[in-house]
Image 1 (cartoon, rainbow, N blue to C red):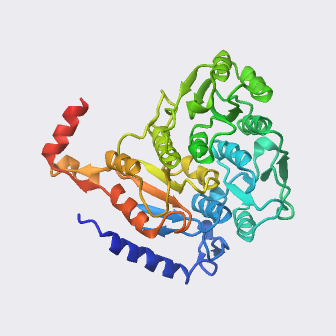
Image 2 (cartoon, rainbow, N blue to C red):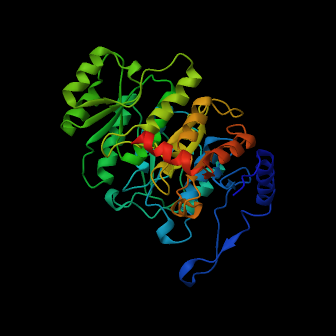
Image 3 (cartoon, rainbow, N blue to C red):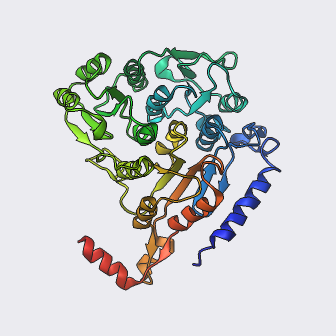
Length: 410
């Protein structure tokens, strides 16, 4: 098996993009069950369709609304009743923390895609995607089809909606946690992700995918205290497991208070000096972390992975659904569209699939990695997509080195 060069892969990407110009709005597929042919999602030319290489799929475009639409349509093609969501979450692209805490609603059982408004306006790509998804309604919420968080953007006529008004961040987070409990038929979560409300956005980004995968809501504290809404929610949950991202943002008084409400575990270490490197390393640590049944624990080949640019924080909740379905990928970050961080290269090399000449280790019996890339080339360049593709590709390894690697692990 011979890998293509980055230049060859870039050409494949370019041809794929050109191919997209001739498809999309006019394409039709025959629905199952003998139904008449239905149109694919009426999405704009700038995105919501994918560009693929052997091991990567790019979703989205130049803004978060398009990115979210691309993710939603990849997970929910909506050509049959079984491929339509129960409910869609609509959040404001001006409000970071509400969008972040909404990510948990992408977890089971709701599996809600997150779409974005522009303030109280509905972008064309969001409206078209919402109409194409046509959510069937969440029985646990009395048939609600759209949950609006911090926005009053109009939705298609006849859609049943519920609106969550914004308060201070801790209030909004608790409102979403209560909504999660309602969607789960009254079952309280026994795990909670704890963030400081003033954490840098890039540091908080991996919490979106982790919340979507685990069903653990995100609750906020400050460096100096546990706010009253968070205090009340934790007291009601009766000693849940508390997982803190970025312990450097939690002061000793806050930490002492948290330990009154549940067992506290740090997912990541204190941030290194460089902010860009910190976000990349923080995301890798979240991807590696595991504690019993909680956490990704991605330390070996055979996984989905989601890649986003640390400078586009809203792409984290937009992509959260990819962490809760399909190949369940943790979010990994790039500090630049045009360079792979050395820490990320090292991590991907550690989990790169391999095969040997032994019959039981041939590539057809191997495990594989797959990467979802979020956004256009201003988020992740085509050359970087090609490099990621190469790092995810199953590769040949000598049987001697394979045996040596195994013996070192043992």
